[in-house]
Amino acid sequence: MIPVAHAQTADLSLPLVAALTVAGLAAAVLTGAALAVFLRRRSRSYLLVALALGALLARTGVAAASIGGAIALERHHLVEHSLDVVMAALVVAAVYYARSAEVSAGGGSR
Image (cartoon, rainbow, N blue to C red):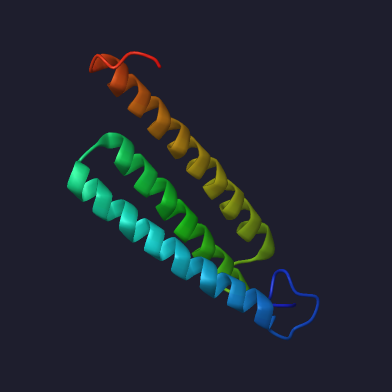
C-alpha cells in the first residue's frame, strides 16, 4: 500500500509537500487575520468568513494527514469534499447575513 495518496510511487513527492506547506502557512495566516477581524468587529458575517477560512486550513491538514498515511484515500476525498461544501455554505451564509443586516439597518439595495 502506498502511503502517499496522490503519488505514483512510495517516494514522498517534494513538490506536493512544498505546495501543502505553502498552502498551510497561507491558510493559517488568513484564518488568523480573519479571527482578528472578527474579534474587532464582532459581526456574525465576519465569524462565518473566519470559519470558512478555518475549513480551508482544515482541508490542508487533511491533505497533510493523507500524505503521512494517517488517512485513507477514500476518506481523504470524502473529508476534503465535505469541507469544500462547508466552506462554500459558510461564505454564502456570510454574504446573505451581511446583505440582510445591511437591509435591516436601512441601507437598502444598491
